[in-house]
Image (cartoon, rainbow, N blue to C red; front, side):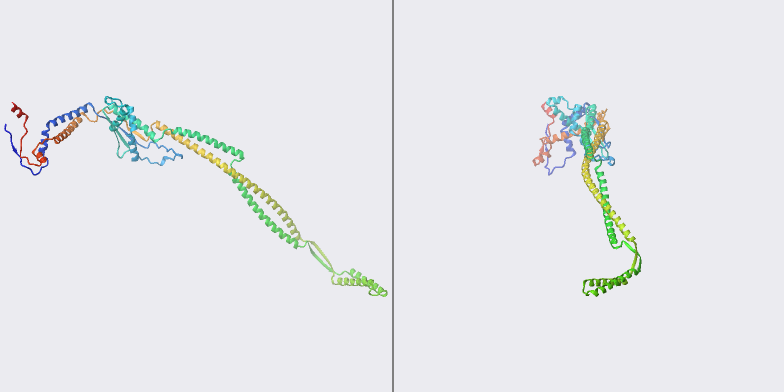
Length: 502
């Protein structure tokens, strides 16, 4: 059969692929397209029929079901004013906890996902490797997502066995709740606080015993109160001493005034004065004078004037005359006197003041001794008060510690009871159950298998056509060589070859 010769003119440039070019690729690779489409579609349909995917679902709700007190050395504050909002950080923390590898490892061990299979037997995998691969598969098939604008977390697990899907989520639920309780509340709190309560009780008993022994030894019940009472008495005694000092000064000043008055006042005073001459005395004096003059005259007759007896008589005469003159000048006075009442009053008041001053001085000495005794007692009670206060501080500290640990022990006991009863800040809002139907129905799986087969086979065809080393069109020759194609021969068909051979 004659061959057709085609003259191809050189083209200056290549145009973009057209639908004809695309169709030409399908026609050139129609055998590969049919085989790949059939294989992929058949594989998808058989896989969906023999190995269906069952998805079990579980939902976790975050809430404020309880508020665990912090483990601290101070009393726990009341949580009445705390808000009940769940933060985004708390929600993300729970999501990461559900994805924790240790948690998934525990699920694998509990559900037997890491058991030995024929694949692991052929690859000679040890138990640790099987468990690790099972953990990776579980992490890949497990989907944990928080629900937006809510406190819910959804957990989905897909496997080929409906019962296994539910069993895995049930195991995950138990492991998650246990780990959540362990992370929120450290384990062993009650035992720790029980030990601390016993130790603090021993310290409290020892401190109370020291306080009782101190009070019995020192003979005081409350040294601080007794010290305050003694200080009050000391203050009163010092005030009394100042009052005595003032009274003594006042009585001393009064006594000095009375002494001056007693010294200046006469003891007796004149009540009546009578003046009169004494005729008898004058008569006696005149007789005496006459007698002396007669005696002098008799002596003059016998003796000289310088004679001693004459001179004595002259002296007696002179004295007698002086007495007569004095009597004439100063008459006889008769005075009547009586006791001075002012003197008597001043004297009696002086005596009273002296007695009062001696009494006040004795009182002052007694007050000073009392002040000294109060001061010594106050100093002793001050030392006892300091020592007793230290012991009371020890008792108070031991009592506060005992009460603190007792409260903490009770809080730990309540927390353990809540953990045992499942009262947590998370709750399983939706329990996992074994799904009755697979994720994709057979019809939907068939449709998706056909769609997938179309896509993958088309991709395989184009890739194979692109990677083929032969030139299929004159345009490819021109594009590769850069020279115009002058002529091209059509491909020889198989039926033409067969006819020619015959």
